[in-house]
Image (cartoon, rainbow, N blue to C red; front, top):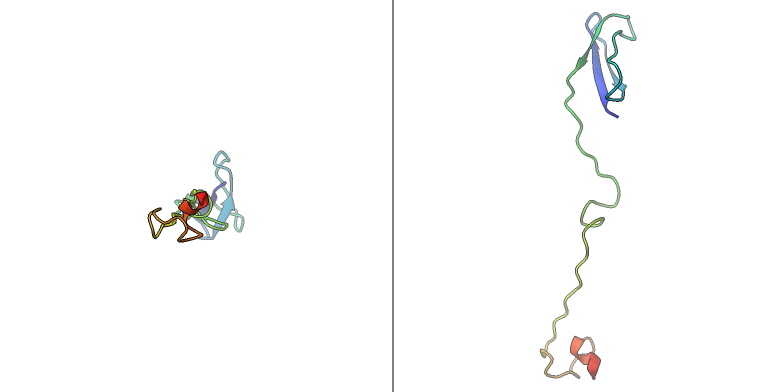
Length: 87
């Protein structure tokens, strides 16, 4: 639900009201009961809360590529080598 800003035309009192978009506009000032008008808001920026956006929440992590120093020619050269699994 948006927050609307109102201003009294009689006493210049400004206030905000949290309303549904379908609610009727307010007509009387809470201070002096004078006529009020709804001001055009400047809007609010988007606020992302939580651990992060996209990079940590939605993005699928890619498997890390391991480089083989021997290109599979010498399978016993490195224990971390993906080619050493078949040794």
